[in-house]
Length: 323
Image (tube, rainbow, N blue to C red):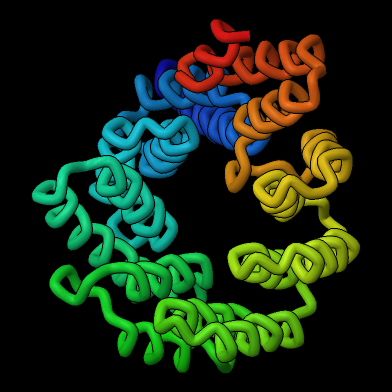
């Protein structure tokens, strides 16, 4: 009888362990949902609770890295992504986010520190692609690094061309975009325009149209930029972060402020929000646009909303103080 009772207790204990695991998984899923919605304060709290119970949870560390990255907190992002990589060294996405975090810090560092960080960026992106050759985001990040970074830290246009050739069979649109960036770096605007157009033809994606629009904006061709952006908006069925990119280009050109406002509001109402364009940053962007148009009351409302989502985000706090 005692043996049977002990067996029952063991089964109950195992069930409790399994249920605990399900709860932690659910919390992890909820934390990711908070992150995608731009609710980074809630995401941070949920992830810190998970990590208090599971300090080796690589996915939770990666998500917390992205929470800090979204708020431009490079050191904290690097710390969390390094922990994620240490606990799951074979995860391509973690390496990609680690490279992005290193890159964020490098962009604000002095030349000596930036030199060492740039090497880490290259290694992380190359490792991400090595681990998953189908990770097109990591390939695009690596391609941009090759284009922008000097050879002394591992950059180079020849490397970028080789990577574009690798991308071509599976990711034709992104490959043409990389070729356009290479041409642009070489001041060959004719080839750059042709490659951006090929990227559009290869996928007819909203992102490709917006890339073309940004190229025209940089070439001081606002009419062509506006045409490409409007076509891209029509192609964006998901209403994702591309809308924010389009609004940003319109604002930088001082073109169609009402359309830019509509795009930002449409994104904020969309279920396709993500940390590609954190909602609190979009709220701040919308607030600045409204303030420029003289609508101080609505701008203040957006600043409050941004600070509510991300209370530690310095630009949101500054906007509240200055409004």
